[in-house]
Length: 105
Image 1 (cartoon, rainbow, N blue to C red):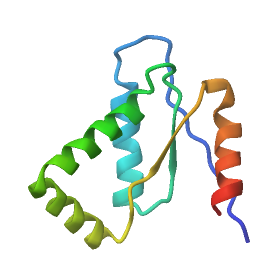
Image 2 (image 1 turned 120 degrees about the horizontal axis):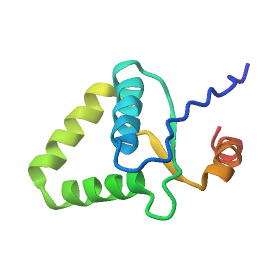
Image 3 (image 1 turned 135 degrees about the vertical axis):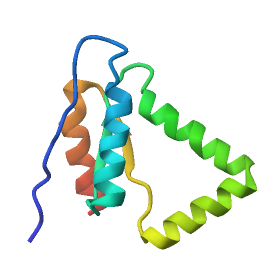
Image 4 (image 1 turned 90 degrees about the vertical axis):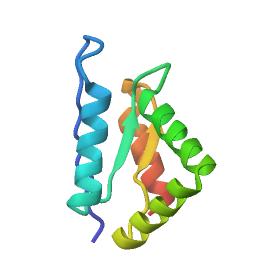
């Protein structure tokens, strides 16, 4: 039986209140500590802050052998890859997730 996705959104019109930080912390906790498979949809158009953060982190790991070793150990112990980050406008977020799930399940 195919599981029905649950959508959770964190939003406010005010900038600088921690939406990106809270989203990353909540996603990381649910994915790595609780074992849920999840997708983060970064709707912070046009800068897509969560996606940019992930890219910076990946570049930092790529340049640092010690971080590469730590990352390899973490993923080996967890037996779980990083969670997927998709970029979309808020209006297109649900459709973007559905399209992704249709092609990746």
